[in-house]
Image (cartoon, rainbow over all chains, first blue to last red; front, side, top):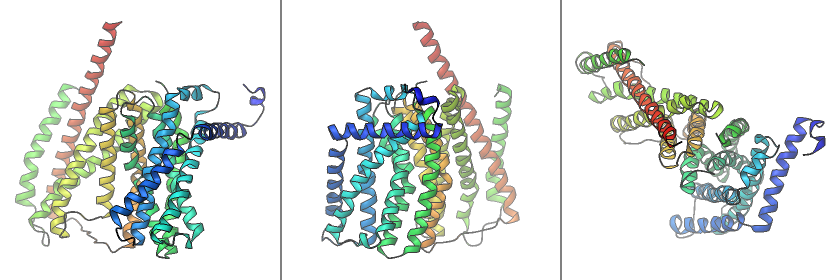
Length: 236
Length: 220
């Protein structure tokens, strides 16, 4: 244990611990690519499956494109979140992570950040793909789109990290994650896809309304997560 | 709940269940626009109230279970979670029957309908996690219940924004004084029924965990 631990302010320790968990996840991922490889490929497949299913002749309206974007992201992130925690379970490393002097809330923030990076990479694949396949003018309001994606992903990942961590010793993990995650993130998908559809229709006021909603949603679930992660993952 | 309280409660609920239909169908006036279909309201609203009541009971029990490892909390949450799904089902079945007459369609993506449906699905997931996830899934289920209750206002707000951008059918009605006795009798009887079911279910859950303890004790 770091001897300086007692002398530095708690906030600094917290951020450093969260940063270490985050760095550890990225490092493991950089070596094995266990999460990213299947998830990125899956997000490409999903977009193609949607194209064949919904837009046979290649034309797609604002509602359809924004729906494909957000439902695709939800499906891909289920894979990303599931794989992230499955890897910890297979190596039995999650218990070791909980045994370190880092606070549980710091572990939660670290996990949240690493899942966030994985899903951001999936977004970097899906958004250009939708632009290319359907000619959707997604890049006309780049900052608002970025804000919608960022805030939506934070909400998605906060709930995903909380649920994923409780799945470790659960039977039927894969199904349970989807069953528990989807009903809870309905507001995120609704806000994200309606907001994106508003952007595609150049309705900036509508998009801003959804941005504010996502901000409130994220605030509730990140705070709830910091507080409830510890009892959720305890071994009792 | 003692045996005596339970018996008295059962008697009251039974009397209420007898009185409510008489008041509803004989004394309450037939609503002018909706006609006979409006009678669903007397069952629909109490069920919706119980659904939300048990949502918060389940969340409170789950929170006690998570934070304090309270077994009692877990048992309360299990009993309440099932009742959320039961009364939610009644709400979601009676709602469309009325909507068909009022709006001409079985289902409308209205704020209350959509929010209730989303909440109901969260609690179906809660029951599934408890049922099929093994003992370790109790924490996952408890998390779901807590998040679900925390999401109630968020779901409502999100669907409200969604639906105010589009035109929406407003059905606001004030209760006619002649309908009040029927409504409140029905409300009290159905609430009593809900509380009795909850007490029974809780007793069952406690007996079940006592049996588990005894098994573990004999194995040692």
